[in-house]
Every structure is written in C-alpha cells, then in structure tokens.
Image (tube, rainbow, N blue to C red; front, top):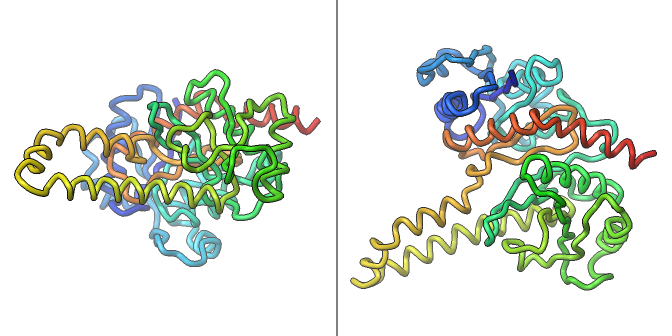
Amino acid sequence: MIKIAVDAMGGDYAPKEQVEGAMLAISKIDDIEIVLYGDPSEINKYLTNHTRITIVESEGTIDMGEKDPISAIRNNRKSSMAMALSSVRSGDTDAIVSSGATQALIAGAHILVGRMKQMKRTAIAPVIPSVSGKPVVLLDTGGNLEIRPEFMLQQAHFATIYAKEILNIDKPKVGLINIGTEDGKGRQLDKEVFELFKANEAIHFAGNVEPKVVLNPPCDILISDGFTANIVMKTLEGTAKGIGAMLKEELKRGVLGKIGLLLSVKNLKRFKKRLAPEEIGGAMIYGLKGVVIKAQGSSKAVGFYNGIRQASNVVRQDVIKKVSEVLEKEGN
C-alpha cells in the first residue's frame, strides 16, 4: 500500500475539503492509505468513512501569510504541516499533499524532508492546460529567483522523467521561455541554458519559446528561472479569470446576450474546468528526497483527490529514484 500524508489543517477550507478529498481518493484508488494530520475533533466532523484513513493529532497550523516560514516550521514542529512533512522523512508515509502556505511548505520540505544530493536547487512545477488538451509542465514557478544554468539542466532532467512517467509522454520536449525564438536571444542565463540543453542528448530540446504561445507550445515542458516562470503562471491565471469575467459580462448585455448565456452555460463550465488548477491536483516540488505536492490554497475536495492521485502516481512510478539514476549518470 502507498501511504499518503495529508495536511488536513492547511488551506482556505480546512479541514472539510481535505477530508472529503481523502474519502473520494480512497473510493477511487485501491492501493493507497491516507493519514490525516490535524485536529481530530474538527476532522471527525466530516470524516464519515474511516476505510484506510487514519488521523494523527497535531497542534496548530502555519498561517497562510507567514512572513518568516523557516522560523515558523522550526518553532511549530507539532503543526499539521510539519508533522506530515516529518512523516515522509521518517518513512512513515510515502508522500505529502498540502494546500498550506507555499513558502512554509518549501522551507519545511527542505528542513524536514531534505533535498536530493544530486539536485542543487529544488523547483516548483505545476502542470498547466493547453489548447490541444495535452498537459504541459511549467517550472520553476517560484522556488529560485536566481539560478545557475547547470542547476536548470538538472531541473529539466527531473521534468523530463516526470512527464514521461506521470504524463505518459514518450519523448517529452523541453522549451526555454524567452523573449524570442531565435538562437542567442535573452539574458546571459538564457544563452548559457540554451547551449547546455542543446548539447545534452538526454534532453529533447525544442529551443526558445515565446510567452505568447505558452497555452499552445511546441513542447511538453516549459522552463525558466523562478522569477520569469512565476510571472508567466500568474499572468495565465489572471488572464483566464479576466477573460471569463468579460465574457460573462458581454453575454449578459441585452436580451440576445442573455439567451446566449443560457445556451452556453455548459460551454462556460467546461471552459472554467479546463483552466482550473485543481483539475491537475497540484504542483510537485522537484528535487526533494520525498514526494511533496503543493495543492492550491483554495482547493476543494476534487483538488485534494487529484493531488493524492498525483502523489500516488509519482510514488508508484518511483520517479525520484529514476531521477537520481539519471543525475548520477550525468554527474559521472
């Protein structure tokens, strides 16, 4: 059995959505057990099915707006997030899913789970939708504002294995986010990364990719430094919400518009679903010794189910071991 730790007290709707998501996951995935870390009295308000679900009592939570995440983790070792992370390090669980404060989760993962010795920098890697319907890995969306080219190469290897093993893409193509598609474009960092990717036989490099095509890219993986990729991700999220709002506003204008709105309700719901982050589950933090999935802070039950499904797939496919083997070979 694969054992998944869930931080039941972190996020906007804790613990209701975490608990309901855990029960949904148990009903759909046969080879998992779930451990809910949190306040038993609160969790039991929503837990109606204890099949393969256990509760471990914790004390307190780490605030979403925590300004000193490292101190918060070190001073709150009995919080739901810290205890769930520690369970992965000890081997009591195989993976963790949390929708708690992002920076606290990253800091806690480094302190309590630990970084792979072959990876010099971790990376936050969500999967974003595309026009074609295929999933696209985007990294690094905030882990490293500044980074060395060789560390980005390590992240590209991790993303390649993740895309192959979890997204079932045979030969994932890697694209470098840049201001133009021509060789030699961008900052010194981009130029050096371009040459590294181009020279590495294990990377199927698609060249530079402009941000205007991130929803219909010529590749399966989009990579940049944490500052750039984070702006790309937040721009996508904001644009999707803005277009959705403008579309609804226009459809409400006049009688014909309102009729059109009624006729297109299903289409609008499908549009919203395609862009919803929780349909994927969460962003995996690459480069750790254990599997850590960051779910959206506003995730509902289906988001946690997908996060648990994603975590169990990464464990089942032994992704971290496969990455270690590739990086060891690269290092030699």
